[in-house]
Image (cartoon, rainbow, N blue to C red; front, side, top):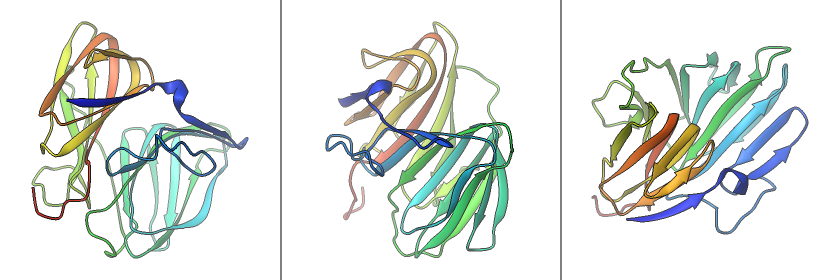
Length: 243
């Protein structure tokens, strides 16, 4: 197994007043040559938007964009005519494909919204832009891993993206553990501690710390206190000859 450890305090940070954003990878004015991506995971931003503010209409192309609200409500509008609201418990996916314009605003005038913004390089380029969202039916069973995003070809009843990538979540009780098994041996997994304290591959992860692992079929996460964990499994490189 190979790995890279990213502590929370090593992330980039931007404060625009209405927007406060932590960048796990190089983004906008933050550039770190050692943190430009993890495999085909290009962006993981941890965003805080004040009431009534947001991102005006702007373009994207050939990128899979996933938004996961952690607090509050986020209002989405795009050039396909879609206008929807997402809130805690929802997940949103947008395939930018040949090109799409969209905006994301805090629907509340006085309460903040917090959400994760994830960008993954696509499997197929120049597809028709696509939008999807759903309310997640979280597993009520603790100490288990629940997949919430999977490739288009999968038969799983989850939201789909245009890449051989998976996003999963787990709530782990204190002194319990889960074992993550990669879907493809050539994939890597970026493990992001949303809350809590866990031990992964002999590395301590506190709130917003991350551990990227690859060249492994599985690894164990041990919780030292109740913890919420996000797993982002992606190809480590574009594949040209199948698996």
